[in-house]
Image (cartoon, rainbow, N blue to C red; front, side, top):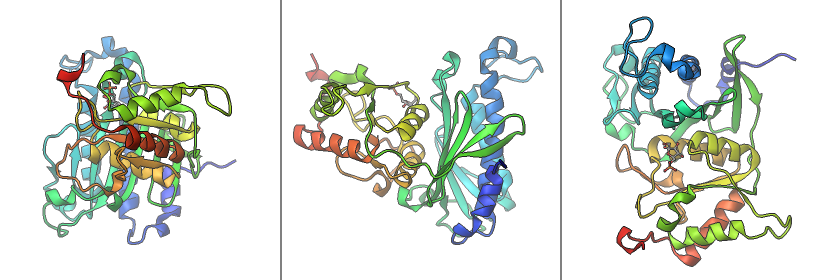
Length: 345
Ligand code: P6P
């Protein structure tokens, strides 16, 4: 059976992109290149004693970088080289990174990204990920990118995706016409179509939340968790809690098997912990394209939220449509106000 590589897939689907004459194709394939470079380093992370800790020199005498800084630099370099991206917003950079070079100033797109999400899990060999989102710029081509290019609602995304560096390395992405998964075949160094047209189950029995924060949750969340832990009427089995503390890994499992991921606001995080621009928006586009739902727990669709700042946090309820709806019912019935730290005994 012949395999379809990521590049072949994008080119075949190019006609789907209303105005792309190869630009989006080039941009997405450059993201694929950076992902392969980062994957190589992530896979060596376990050999840190040989390669040297961040801040020390590696065997080549190069300054060893923290992997998330390394990933940020590789994605920025590849996006700049594509000539299709005029700037990026990244979890690793306080402000937008504007590409000054002539070739990049003519780029029609901007990218928001978390270059290596969950990187604190690297040294315990837990799956981590890169998350990205692509918008068409609003500012005039040929000029420098502006902040308003980056604070567009999530509904304006032209593409979104993530790379999960796990038991295998996989890119899951959407250009607004369904979700497709590409698994890296190391023997040929190509991402190959392995999960065509991913649809997430409308219901599931997996719930993912950091229950260590339980006493800081709003009552609606506490009551929903209680509901999940009661016996499931049909199967007689309670739901199953699965939480690995790495958004891409937790989301990817639930996307394929059915489930809900919740990072609500809490006494510790009154706006939630996850970032709207480069964590929640791209994941929300993917889940909606796969038939799921993503809200802030109070009926607001994530993709409709108008960003007010680059690193803005939002509460995040994402996954199987029926499960997110059920969680929202509990938030409405029992309240979505998080307790104050002083009121927690
Ligand atoms: P907590 C990783 O640091 C991250 O940004 C996400 O990948 C993950 O879902 C979340 O934070 C975990 O946060 O507070 O449960 O450790």
